[in-house]
Image 1: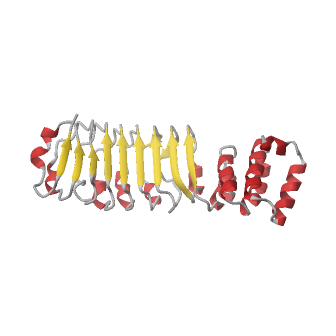
Image 2 (image 1 turned 135 degrees about the vertical axis):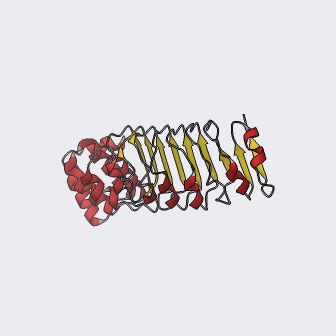
Image 3 (image 1 turned 90 degrees about the vertical axis):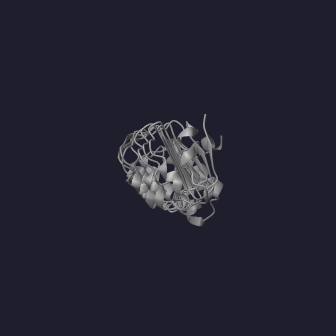
Length: 272
């Protein structure tokens, strides 16, 4: 493995990196390999070296720095390295007990967090205009979605197995959203946030048994696919009278909604 060949250089590695980097002779590929070697062999004292390599590197170097982020989970690495990356990258974390470092991921294009622990809300999200996809699964101690609007150009949001019951209104500020999916989200009670999502095309609320009102889905005129399977708590379907566009609606019992559909809309209702 090339990384371990570099590691055999020992103390000479630092000097070679400094010389190559200062002369501009280090290629993107070599820069990535050196970052991986520093990650394997070093401690926090190598962070300035990684920063220097990153300054002259490209996509491969940037991706290597993101991998190294898992080894240097601290504010110094986030602030001096991650926040300086201009190449688009993906953040994929699992079982992190501290996600505050997300604030430095300003150039990320996708964030995926599985079984991670939050501090009440999504205030840790970066002010990232490049992030278009956000996925959360089994979040711990996430009580509010407040802060999600920091992802100004978010197009896809997926939340799985969450008890979060506040801050859904913040989604109304994510005006570029095209697809929203909730699966087994017991805190979801209404869909009012849909009212201002003019670009919304797909909405799924599966297994959200506390969902009581769907008022809001009649407003996005491009909303063509709606799935409400397992949402047994819905009692009021009257807003479907206001739907004036084509829509495929999947629900448990079509008989509950067939007499609510407007004559102008071609709405197709499916059930299991």
